[in-house]
Image 1 (cartoon, rainbow, N blue to C red):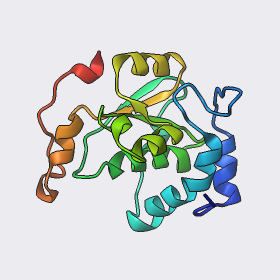
Image 2 (tube, rainbow, N blue to C red):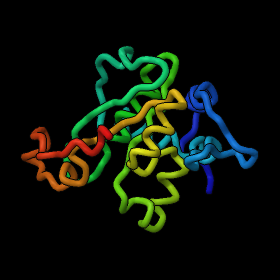
Image 3 (cartoon, rainbow, N blue to C red):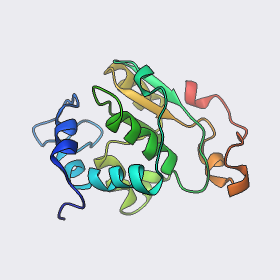
Image 4 (tube, rainbow, N blue to C red):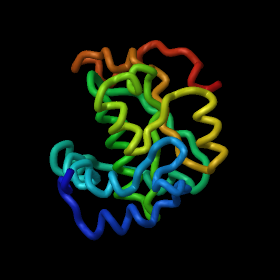
Length: 167
């Protein structure tokens, strides 16, 4: 697969992210920086030109372990991707934020491979603990899949959620 959109700026930011890669070039969760270099430009384009994201307070994301808590805005989880792009593009130094994904994601053809390669993790307490112990940033959506079932008119309304994400 060729590069979708690339730039020296994006590659330089990606190279500055701290990673703990195996001899195979991926981390324990499947994050593959070489793969990300080929697709990060598309994410940056969507962030800047499609959604035209505006970011406020990204400098408040601390170094070290942190859990970012958000609510979904509707049917497709672009919100998580855009939060991750904001931390990567707007914060100095760039920060890699991993989303905790629902259990159906690793069982979905093509999506499972893509999500692992770009660093997203299955949302289990064990994975969250491992990630935070490694001083990484974790993005959680307490509404879970309920947040994805919102209509456009409900996009800014919180859905009922449990506390399982806090275990």
